[in-house]
Amino acid sequence: MSNSYLNGLLAPVTEEVTADDVPVTGRVPAELNGRYLRIGPNPLGLEDTESYHWFVGDGMVHGVRLRDGRAEWYRNRWVRSRRVAARLGEEWPEGPVFNDFDFAPNTNVLGQGGRTFALMEGGFRPYELSHDLDTLGPCDFGGTLKGGYSAHAKKDPHTGDLHAVAYYFGWEHLQYTVLSTSGLVTRSVDIPVSDGPMVHDLALTQKYVVIYDLPVTFSMEMAMSGAALPYAWNDAHPARIGLLPRTGDAADVRWIDIEPCWVFHTMNAYDDGDRIVLDLAKFPSFLRDGRLEDNPPPVLDRWTIDPAAGTVAQETLDDRAQEFPRVDERLTSLPHRYGYTVTAQASATEPAGEALLKRDYRTGRTDARLFKPGSGVGEAVFVPSAPGSAEDDGYLMTLAYDTERAATDLFIISAQDFTGDPVAVVHLPVRVPTGFHGNWVPDQY
Image 1: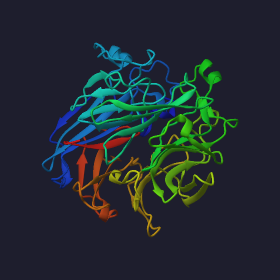
Image 2 (image 1 turned 45 degrees about the vertical axis):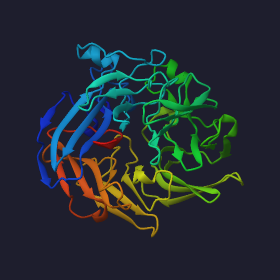
Image 3 (image 1 turned 180 degrees about the horizontal axis):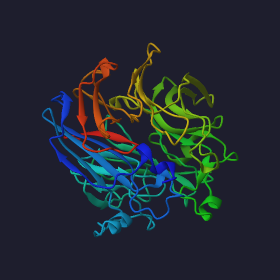
Image 4 (image 1 turned 90 degrees about the vertical axis):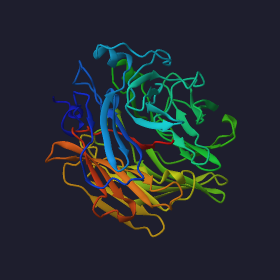
C-alpha cells in the first residue's frame, strides 16, 4: 500500500489472537497483578486506502495479564463499533452514542471504578470493555455524560475522580467533567470558546484545571472536501491558557494569552505558592494544512504561570525531539521529581522513537535507555512497586518491536535501574502496531 500509515510498524494486524502462558525472559515481579493495556488504530476493511489518516483507524486494544509472576495471557480485540461489528458479521452491542456519532475508540484505554473504558475524543463516547477486552458497548456513564468524552482524562490520586475536557465541532464550548469512581459524572462545566479548537489533554493542580485553547481548530472547508480529520493549524486563532478553579464555573476561568504553539500531552502540573508549574511536550506548530508530516518536532518545556500577573514564562528544558510524557501518577497535581518521555521523530511516518528518556527535575539530568533500531518503542507507563512506595520505586512498562522475532515485546524495567537490564521481557506472539496510549490497570482499581 502506498499510504505510509498502512506500512511498516503502522500496518494493521488482521487477526484477533488469544495466547495463554506467554513466554518471559527474566522475572515478572510478583507484586504486578493486573493488566497492561494499550490501544491504537487498526483499520478493518478499508475501502479507501489513499485518503486514510492514522488518527481515524478503528481502535484495537492489546492486553497482557500479569499475575503471580506469570504472563497469564495476551489478547488483542477490535472495539466493536457499529461499523466494526458489521464488518465482522456480528451484532452491534447497542448503546447510547452521541448524535448518532459512532466510532471504535483508538486513543486511550484505562480502568475506572472496576470497569474498563476505551476512549476517543472529538464527540465520540467511550466504549466499555470486559476484563478480557470484549466489547460491552458505548457508554454515557449512566446517562450523566451530556456529549462525547475526552481521550485524555486525568485521575486525581486522592479522590480517584477522572477530570476531562471534551470538544466537538458542533459546540461553541468545551466541556469539563468530573467522573467519580462510581462511574457517574458529578460535575460538568461548559466553557465558551470560538472556532472549535482541538483539545487533547488538560493539566490538573490542587487549585486549578488548566485548559489549552490553541491554534488547531475545526475546518469546515476540509470537512466539506472529505478530509478524514478536518482539523488544521489556524493562524487566526489566538493561543491561550485557561485557569478554571477546581470549584469554579465558566465565568471564573482566567484566560492568559501565549505565543502560538500546540500541546498534545501534559507531563504534570502543580501549584507553587501563587504560581503554577506546568511540564509538557510542546510543538511550535502542528497540523499545518491538516498534515501530520513536516511538523516541527516537540520539545520538553516547563511553563510557569503567574495568575496574578497574567503571564506564562516558557522555558525549553530539553530540545531533543520527544513526546508521550508520563510521571508516577500518584503525584498528579503534586510536585514530581522524575518524568519519562519517548524520543520522537520529526516525520509522522516514523512516529515512534528508539529510546526512553528519564529526567530528574531536581538535578536536571536526563538518562537515555536505548532500544534496537526498528524497535518503535512506545509510551512508558510507571507502576509503583507498592501503593506506599517512594517516587521512582517501581517499574516502567513499554512495548518494543523485536525485528528478529517479527513480534512485539513488553519490557518491564526497574525505574531505579533505568539503563540496566530489564527485569522481565514478555514475548508477545504477534506484532503490536504503533499506537497511542496505554495504562496499567491493577486487579484492585
